[in-house]
Length: 92
Image (cartoon, rainbow, N blue to C red; front, top):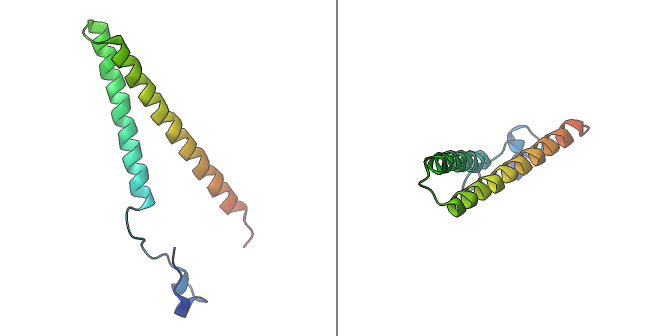
């Protein structure tokens, strides 16, 4: 967030200016979509194992990748909740 030095003491100077590159919410949305695809891949791999047409090693790799993605999302969520709680507790 950049603060306009000309209006630093006003509400206008404290407004966030858009940063170059991707927005944080876009990155989170992309990560969520990737996790959803990983879960879909696991479901499809399990279906193929049930039909007897899938390689068990490939399925194990797919499941491990989805598990890592889930752990990453949970960690990000926990960090966001902690940051929010810290902001709420900050005296103004």
